[in-house]
Length: 137
Picture 1 (spheres, one colour):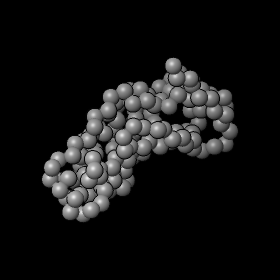
Picture 2 (cartoon, one colour):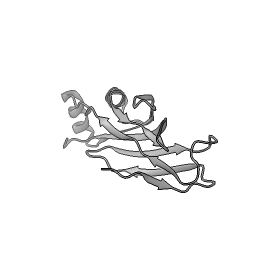
Picture 3 (tube, one colour):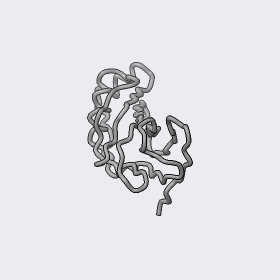
Picture 4 (tube, one colour):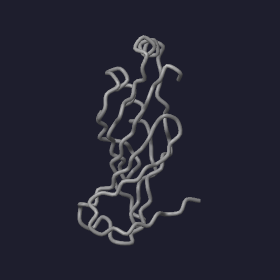
């Protein structure tokens, strides 16, 4: 059972924490505390958890493209996890090439999360997700 994390928040505009994820993705959660009343000192903040994750495809044509380039393709997306767990507001922050960007957006748009909660109330949260394709994948 996961224990809630307690944070004492005073005049901190942003709280950032890192989530370890399997595979080659990494999440950085940013809760925006600039909106008054969202988080009070000693609030219990539960980070969002992935419930359903669709793995990105790696078509043969793109595998060949990476082999020719001799590098990896990394796509970093900024997403909004809604209080319903739905992923919206996807935008490419770091491009891995147009084809890989499209694959990443298609994949992440189908992910579902258990939403972030502040004192038991579901809240919208922004996060950054990176997906990396490598020749050895």
